[in-house]
Amino acid sequence: MSSNRAPSNAGHDAAAGKNCLNCETAIDGEFCKVCGQASSAERYSLSSLAQEVYIQLRKIEAAKTARTVWALTVSPGQFVRDYLAGKRVAYINPVRYFFYAFFIEVTVKLAAVSVVPENPLVVQAQGGITIELMNFGLTIVWGLLWSVLYYKADLNLIEYVISAIFFVAQTFILSAALLLVMLPFAVALPSPAVIHASIDLAVYFAYSCIFAYTLFNVRWPILILKQILVAVIFVAIIWILFSKGYYRASKPVSGPLTEQAGPRTLPPVR
Image (cartoon, rainbow, N blue to C red; front, side):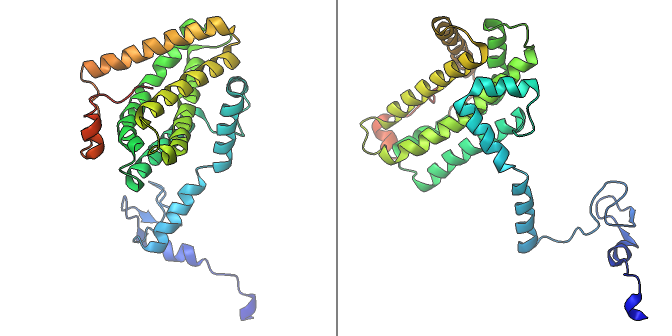
């Protein structure tokens, strides 16, 4: 009877006789066998765009990212050792985490610029984005310095670089959090930009010491001296890059805040 007929392959029949919109190969199925594009490459609409955004957001793996942030906050050295030892399935890989953290910090700073453009800390945040862009290329330098000053036979050079990637990425998160915490108090502070930069540098250095201590198991007096040396070399490299013109500071922001403080020719290094 008609009720017992096998279901028709409507999707297959609809795709048959079509050409791929990407490579113009004849399509016989849901995907092109040559380039892999879906046969239903329809025009964008509000619903299709919303669906695509939703699909991409699901790929962010928020739970893994949150676990990675927490682990790098409470016990960074132990987390990195476990990760290098193979305990990785519950966490984000270092490269992806680096880009997630960078995106979070830049988004926070740009949002602050849009929402409270006259806040004293926002003027500094605009220059701070330039520094974060520099960290993309200089992360490997931090790893190389660690490999020299904290040489351990059980770690190879790439593992030092992986450790540095996790470290720098976490400082992006800490910097974004500090900016959000200090924004409401910026107007009441006497020199908010200076205070914020000082606290940011202090947090950066303190976290670098905690990270190195829990990872390399070095005595505190020696560790602090080594971290000061790493920081001095790192800042010297940044200063050289600025002085040679490889990186340009952000343009001064016009307005009453900059008229009082004067134009900044170099964003604070942290």
